[in-house]
Amino acid sequence: MSKALDLITRVRGVRGAMLVSTEDGLVVAEQLMEGIKGGAVAALAASLAGRLGRAMEAAGTGTSVFWHLQAEQGALLVVPGDASGGILVVAVAEPDVNIGLVRLELLRAAEAVV
Amino acid sequence: MADEIRALSAQLAQDPQSLVFLRLGEALRRKGQLDAALRVAVNGLERHPHLADAHDLYARILTDKHDYARAFDEWDMAVRIAPHHTGALKGLAFLYFKVGDVAQAEAHLEQARKVEPDDPSIDQAIVMMRKGAAPPAPEPSAAPSPPAAAVSPAAASSALDEARVFAGLEGANEGLLLIDGAGRVLGGSLKDKAGTDVTDAVAAYLAGVSQEAARTAKLLGLGAWMGLSAEGQNGNVHLAHPTPEALLLVVRERGMPLGRLAILAQRATLMARRWLEKQ
Amino acid sequence: MSPQTRAVESWTLRPLTDFVREASVRLVLVLTPAGQVLAQSGFSRAVDVMSAAALAAAIVASTGELARQLRQQPFAALSHQGPKTGFFLATFVTDRGTLAVLAAYDLDVSSLGLVQLFYEQLAADLKAATPKGTVPKQVLAADFERELTDSLNTLFGR
Image (cartoon, rainbow over all chains, first blue to last red; front, side, top):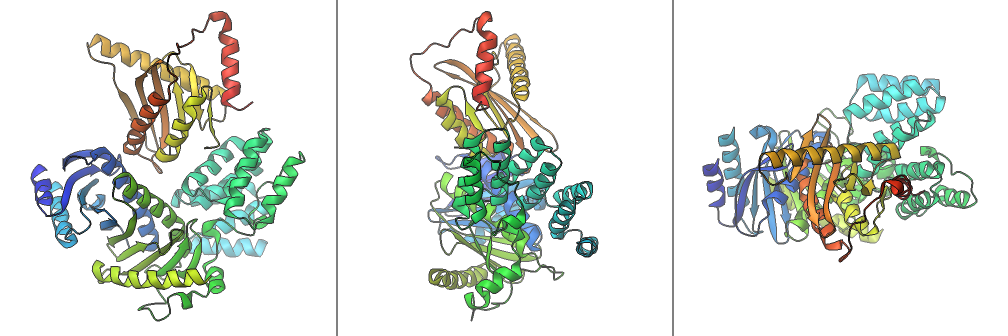
């Protein structure tokens, strides 16, 4: 698990990576830079994943396999539960991070977790 | 009425996932067939547990059955899912008044009035309550602005002529949806792969997604959120907010990369913003 | 202010209202380990508040005793999760002594992570809002029934 997270945090601009329990919104494993609150990231990412998942199911686009919340001062990138057995793989990053690269590492980490 | 119920039942049997149960449940309730209405509402809730309108329907039926404690819970749940749900706010006001808590009843009606300032039924209810008479139990027909998911997409889009919102944009006639902060459709429409109109259901869920995205970005110190892109198994979506109050959803085939989808969404956002400023 | 939130001690109201809104919990009690309720949210019947408070106080007492026998600090929090609903019970220390928070949430709209996250804020806000220099009032047996009635009336806005 820690190796999978390690590969994500090596991407330039990534400030932390974690595995989160989808159902509970609790931290399973984390590698975070100082100042990032793991518990808050886990709870909020899981909650947003749940709400987004319901909207996507309703829209007929099926289960989400990757999502990316873009904000002024950073980004949250997530590979959600179903692909990785009830675990969210989450990265917190700078706003100008290479999204494609982080996505790839998140998907790899999800495979490794399964 | 009987014909309507038959037609709605047939529609529901054909597509049990559809939101037609809301109309069927309400029609049965109005006809006084409360047990049948209750079954329809409960079945609907099982399929759509996060739909505020489903909880609202269930609460109205429970109120008719004088089960006020459970009706309170259902309207409470509806407001938790959709804080601006005027039907539920009026329902809670009605129940508060029934237990003699006039202050809470009025507070809920005031909240509803903020959402629907042009709804005369709310003003009437406040006046009646101040005179000491019970405000009427909430009826969907009494509210000119129905709850979010009950807005017919056809009516909403024809009134606002959504074709003009996104005119000239690639794929302007499909997979674009503009809603307000309360989950009401302002323009556009959505269909799933089977061709079923899913505009109302998606609109109802999107308001919650937007609130959660805003809270997440704020509490994690990421500043204001600008967009949310997601890759699904059968399609990709991008959510943006052209104005602080409005939300824009762009849905495209899985084949369209997220980067291109973001560019398309950016264009649609600009067009929606201009259109909204003109309204 | 959330409409269903009521407090006997007014300083608990704002923190509790914020907690209810942010964590999307259905029911909350703020109480002393003796079962005296300071504030409630979401309850519609006095009898439910009384039973929930008594049960929560009993759990706090029994887990406290378990911890004591194991020579541990009292357990910080306790969580139970059913198929649709979760319960969360935790205690924290303020200037007015230990307080407990009991929260029930629907798994459809909230999660243990969210409840824990905003509980930390609630505990911090309640600690900060606790009136300084006041001593918790001892409730005498003779006054108990009147105190209870007064509290329930306040909690239900009567």
